[in-house]
Amino acid sequence: MSTLTIGALSTQAGVKIPTIRYYESIGLLRPPSRTDSNRRTYDAAAVRRLRFIRHARELGFEVDAIRQLLTLADDPGQPCEAADALARAHLADIESKIRRLQALRAEVRQMVDQCEQGEVRSCHVIEVLADHAHCLHEHH
Amino acid sequence: MSTLTIGALSTQAGVKIPTIRYYESIGLLRPPSRTDSNRRTYDAAAVRRLRFIRHARELGFEVDAIRQLLTLADDPGQPCEAADALARAHLADIESKIRRLQALRAEVRQMVDQCEQGEVRSCHVIEVLADHAHCLHEHH
DNA sequence: CTTGATCCTCCAGTCGCTGGAGAATGTACG
DNA sequence: CGTACATTCTCCAGCGACTGGAGGATCAAG
Ligand SMILES: [Zn+2]
Ligand SMILES: [Zn+2]
Ligand SMILES: [Zn+2]
Ligand SMILES: [Zn+2]
Image (cartoon, rainbow over all chains, first blue to last red; front, side):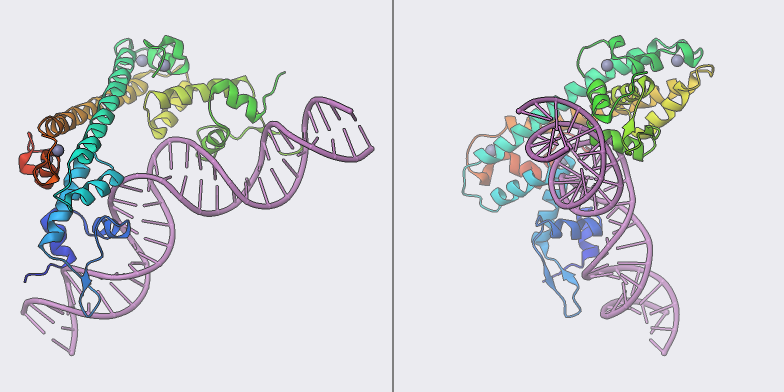
């Protein structure tokens, strides 16, 4: 029955100690048992749960989505529709972020490319920023 | 000499009133003159400056970079090197964000595609989240 | 027994806004 | 001139997802 200190959990899951406490405070991690001197003690299930959370965060899922995914993961008999819907929504979100960034990249690239390394007075970077009419696309 | 109320400035520049006050508080906009009853009064230069700020924000520049860009724009005789460096740095930032998002897209797409709409027990979405070893790439 | 590592709680800061409370003006209409 | 409504003022709290510091308690090793 190996129990872990918060420091050991932190190392095993690759999550900083204040972040672990933060996850507990927002209800992502259940409050663990405590020693007589009030220190948190974790078990192997907590490591799995925290790794799940960290991995989902690395993949860009928001905390609220992770909360729902954890609820589903806790109940393996259910249909996985809801989980897949969350993942698809996240995918759509990523794709829209990519599109936006690609549009920005085009604008900023053009600014940079057209600069002739002269005075600020005639610098294309400053000109474009001062007037959206110089942009390639109507909307950003 | 037409002076503008904060509401008129807000309309002309497309920036909300609390945001204008916020920009003033962080030193992006200079404190404007005031009426006898303490209301802010703006001129045409303020409209240009605020439009510049808003456009730079839309293009993703951070406030700190905008502060530097404004300082440069105020001094048109200087070489534009610094402005271009800021723009290039921003471009590099956008590009790295795009790369990261494309990696995430690949992972999440794979999760979604491999789901067979069964039980949570065997759902690929949940499996991948629980174990990074299922991921396509080592690092996210 | 002392030192240094680890842990506890609480609170403030990050970034770029956004919005609400409560009070003071400004403007328009009758 | 009064009244109603719109606009503005300042101050402060909240978003999301942490991060880190202060100040104090406790643990493990020599
Ligand atoms: Zn230039
Ligand atoms: Zn533009
Ligand atoms: Zn599934
Ligand atoms: Zn992974």
